[in-house]
Structures are given as structure tokens and as C-alpha cells.
Image (cartoon, rainbow, N blue to C red; front, side, top):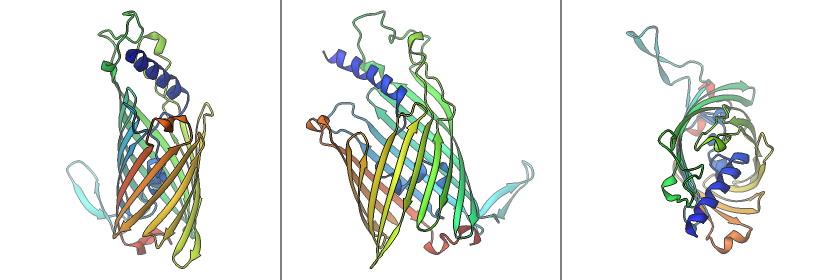
Length: 326
């Protein structure tokens, strides 16, 4: 019976992933929107290091889990970059534009018997528009797709998923993503597209050749209301969809006190309620989110937990109005 469960879960995973969301899921994305949109790299002027750990559906064997680490920065006018006219002659000159943002992102995402480890590097260009900013970003990535088939046992030796010596269990797949982002102090909105190459993953024999990575689209927007007495309210939304119009919507709201404490809640279509909170100690930010699934699966699970910690370096005075002038 256990063997049939593994096989059923694996085949279900192939079908669902081939037709819907194939990328890691985050509940505290608004604390590090760069993971969804490469145009955000350096948009706030901070040099930021972030760590995220997500454990989904605790209580189940081989439950989904995601671990991610990201870095982003802005090359300001007073920063320095290496410029060279040829291979042998390199000089260290100041960057004058102050419009370039750089970022990097590495993650490991395990979902059942499928393990995916990837790395991404991005370049962003920020354009000042009076009291706002328009940003464009492009990212190149590569990931390793690994099928943990040692846990699968078949009664039928002719099963198409049984490998021969010519079939690879581990695949290395290149990819790319693109994004655009508009921001003021109060408002932000962004659009991004991931998995632009739509690569095919040939993980089995001919009958499984059509397992394809689909383009994913992300639309984000939010507004910050000043409530006075050091309180701010930030409602936001995230719309995720694919070319097959399999969509998911997050509706969020967060209440901040002096940017030192925050509480929030989200509703995700598909019957999920998310509660979150966090605090800041000097330049270090800590966040926690709990996903409560409004379905029968909560009878067997203690929920989904997500932890986030971020280090933000850079004086607040260099932010906004707008960053490239410093």
C-alpha cells in the first residue's frame, strides 16, 4: 500500500505541477519582493541579505519545504566599480549613474519526490521620475531538477517511469525572468514573468516528455497609509497566474508601528488564511508567518510555518527622493 501511495502522489504531482504553479511559494513575499521580481533589486537603496525557511503541512512525510537566501544592492554615485579597457589594465573608478541594482538568489524547493535547487543573478536599472521611480530588471538563472526515485517501487517492470541507463534522474536547466516595477514612498506596483524559456523536462520515457515548465506571471501592488502616531497601514495584493490561466490571489494587510513592529493577515484563494508578524532590532528584521489551510487537510497537519530574517545595510537618508542623486 505504501508503494501505491508514493506512486499516486508522484503522478499527481506531475499533473498538478505541469498545469499550475511550479515555483516556490512564499507568504511573506512583501518583506522581500525581490524574490518575485528582478526589477526590485536595489530599488530601495539598501544592501540587503535575506534568509527564508518555509515548512509546509507539518505532520506529513515528504511535505513541501523551501529554503532561500537572497542578496540585493544599489550601486550609488559614491560607490565604486571595476572598469577595464582590456584584460591586463583594470582601474577602480566611481560609479556615476547611481541607477544600477544587482541581486542574487539561491533556493532549494522540495515537493514530494521532486527536489529543485536553483540560483539566479539579476541586473536592474532604475529611472528617476520626479518623486517616483521606474525600474526594469532582467535575471538569468539555472536550476537542478532531481527526481528522488529511490523511494518509488513498481510491481510492473515495464512501468514507463522505470529508468534505463540512458535516462537522467538529475537535469540542469537554464532559464530567465523579466520584471518592471514602479514605486513612490506610498505606492508600489510591479509585474514580472518567470520561466521565460518554458523548458521541457524529460524525466522518463516518451510518455512523459510533455512535462513542461510554464511561464509564470506575477502582479503586485500596495499602498501605505499614514495613520498618525507612528502607525502605518499597508494593504497589498499579489496575483499569480500561468499561461493556462491557473491563478492564485493573495489579499494582504499589514499594520506597522515605527517600522519596528508589524502584524498582518492574508487570504489566499484556495482556502488559506495567513497570520504574520515581526519586529526589527537595529538593522535586523525578523518575521514569522503561519498558514492555516481551510480544508480537511488541517485534520492531519499542524499547519505551515515560515520564518524570515533580513539584514539591511544603508542609511535611511539615501532612500527615495531619489536614490541616484547621493
